[in-house]
Length: 193
Image 1 (cartoon, rainbow, N blue to C red):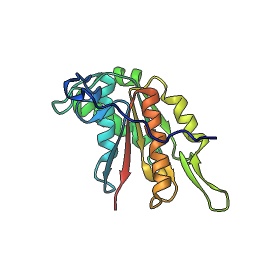
Image 2: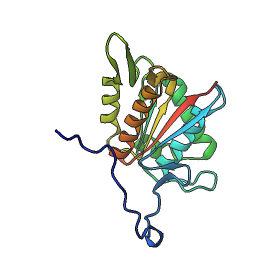
Image 3: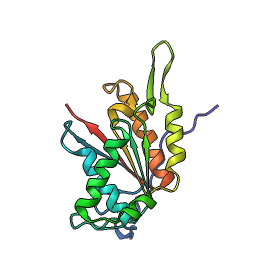
């Protein structure tokens, strides 16, 4: 039997005259809907705090740093920091920017994943590969109807070999599929060496 082609040919005729729809952003020019955005930095540089600030602005539909923020429901998965720290930082963001707490309460869902398994795991050579976990499927259920999904952070969400391109690609494609399914902006925070 003939196998299906791996690639689709894209017709480029007339592309120069085509009018393309504008990119739909959660935060103008920073967080496009339907895509994964990686925010990386050294530990303690403020990635988690900035993510909460961006989320709070989206929850309220308030401009941030001169950039338009689309009002939407937001999901924050914290796999690194516990509930008290997450809520304290959200409280600080709300107060620092004068954002209405009731809007944030109505639009934000926070998941504590500090004791949860990773979203992706390397089963090891004896188990035959790597894949997303049931925790990823649970995240997918919570993600329905969200405009912004923050995953804090990659080192806790990804329990594979970060030097294995196939594993990293599989994980990133799963996140990209989640972004497309929900039409949400997915923001993945990551520590760098």
